[in-house]
Length: 530
Image (tube, rainbow, N blue to C red):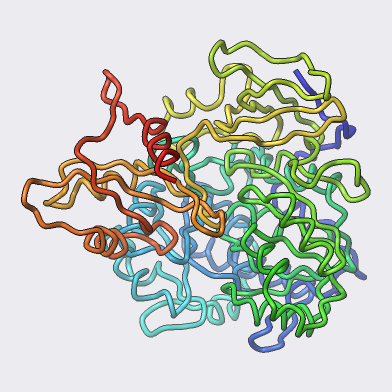
């Protein structure tokens, strides 16, 4: 077993709200917490805490408490911080929903999570209304933050200025958030993360990431994703940094915001690193204020990372995590040029890890002459590991063992200098631009098509070396089904990032004797044809 080289940190037994906001000093209350480029409006820490308290009070007056699950369908706008933390302050559990989801996908998550409230913004109201009605959420419990006829809005609720309620729960067991993850396989499942999980991961990140109160963070990665929720929103707020919010990524707007607001710290996914390294428009902007770029959500190759760093004269670092680990488990610290940027860095404090042989299940502890272990599945344990999957005891048991180790499904090696490198994926999950895509979800959809007899989906690399979903399809005889028909059918029923990008028709899907799809055979077929 390998332990973190970083000394353990104290994990306080506090709620997320108390950990982030209870210790605000008079001086810190005047610092800028949020900047909205759309309006130029700034929100101080003092004002943000007041809004959170008032929103919690308004929810509590309407019966929201520790037994309530609230859905949040919202892009990165300053109000996200108010309502997200306000709901947590009221004792509710928040299930954050991808802003790109279709009404059917929203409905599915609301029902599975048991949500009885939904919060959204007017541009997303059409799909939110459909999903809310289908889920039994009435109009008076569908809050439209920026206002819509027939629904409560944020201005009204804050205007009541109700005091925050007195709530009592155990931070170690009370579920704060329910993001949805496909885990290592299967359809998305609710990941139960407690207040202690979230507090622990912010405390762990504080020891590894050098974010300080004078930093300005460009918040382009979605807050609804656990990466954005913990590393952008919660960590930045705990460090009293300023967040410049961006509802969606646009390269010119991204660069313009960095230049205009003097952003210093960027949290990104690999496609943004590619743009920083290669896109000619980057040279048209002064982004010299940026000193650190931290990439996560998907693997970033060393060549791209180094090229981006050279071009913008900043440290480019990489980390690793999963929704099931709140999410960060590894990060390259600043000031460690000896750690290759192709690695995911050091294990965070308070964590243990194992590298386990995929065939024998034996722990790998020996190093070769170059200082690396043999390849094996990465297992990890710590205070940030999830409470489990919602209503999925078997999936939980399959993912977190009796000793508390999360079986990541990723293949890694460990170096004697203390850093880990992800070298392959044992799990079936596809990562498209940092978003998770479960093959099983797309396969189930494809099988609902009347002309499809069987189907399988794997991840393949496109010309930019990004992983994309490819479908192998067996059609009914004489169906006349074409690739464009399949692509259009999937696109009409899923969020844009889940779309099938390539289709190949085959005679039969390779399967094991137990009926499991043999994706390795499909990947081998793909390699032969490449």
